[in-house]
Length: 282
Length: 266
Picture 1 (cartoon, rainbow over the protein chains, first blue to last red):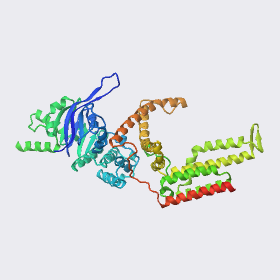
Picture 2 (cartoon, each protein chain N blue to C red):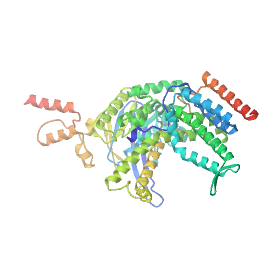
Picture 3 (spheres, each protein chain N blue to C red):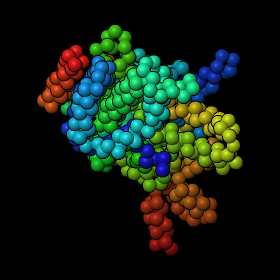
Picture 4 (cartoon, chains in turn brown, purple):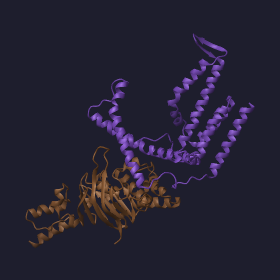
């Protein structure tokens, strides 16, 4: 399978002024991202997950090691716009990433920067707004919209640039449960359309939607694999003060109570099925 | 409540004046200001007022709306009027101590007041009939020939766009900070002006910190969306001058010629 992102021994240090020791946010991280995959990167605050996201499209440049996006090295100044066009990014705060006071102008901002032809920008803007179900808000002012709607506009702004990869840096952290659901639905839809999705989050319920989970702890990869496999290792995850999905937690307690359900169940449906099977056996 | 503020003083309507290209309107406003300074008698002002009256009528902006915008400058208007009426020397018609009013004084004071009223009404027609964003867009395009000489036309327009976008965000932020301070006993309403100004310091400091944080976030988001200055950028809305814009240009030129002739021969 094609690799769209390759991270090799990535280390990143933040400088804290001349006299202070630099802080190591990432320490020898290596992984590859498959084309069309959906990867969730989880970790608690300060684990380096946001720093990692910003290293994936050249907003931050590795202190040592390398990041390649579709073959382009992020350290290469010449390639930086190629990289950012291919790897779009949606940030945490919906308010602080919108540029214009009219929705459609904001969505057009990215394609305008790329020098796309005006007629083509029009098509892309309309399509992107339809994709996030915000077509009717084209002429509205962003500050009159809800958090979830603003975040959908931000996603449309990235989609209109036609990137191969979309990196979501905790896109739901500042939203209410309704907004969170809307955004997750759109992320899944984009993945369904063939985009490569990388979702940085600290909500386990969002992580289980991915087909691969990477757990970061203190700048290093702790676990990396399919969610079903990862969440079997409940004890390791709990050891670094991370929660496990609600169903995994329930399964764990059932096992501890001597009830025989499989380890590492993450979805509600699977749990229901496992319990029903138990019942029919007895 | 803070969310419903309207930006600028734009009066939403769909009149022929609203539909004109912003560049045409900016030029017209500049010409109108120049014309007001060419005029040296009341006949000239009458012509200007008539033209302005027609523009207002066509624009469908209610007179009441325009008058509301005049309120803040009433003081300046009275001040210039008083200054002129008392300071100009000439044939004295009324005297009280060191104050005296002359015939020439009255004439000049009225003259200045009329000029000022026309000036402000005329230029506010620009902001009343043009959305702030279109205005910055128009200015960027008019100034872009000077970009080659190092004039930052695109940068200024970008800054204005962002400023317009973030005014509501910063207002919300201010509201939030003030409420947080009030919840902890801050008092913004009592005391004299100095006390009240001092009470605002604990609001301003966090507001500035938060403004810088927003700026940092926004800069990163803009870079992530490939923003690299004005060169090589295309625009969603192309500005094209249409027939009506050229017609408006012709009318402007005719108006200018009329004013110049009037000032010379009357």
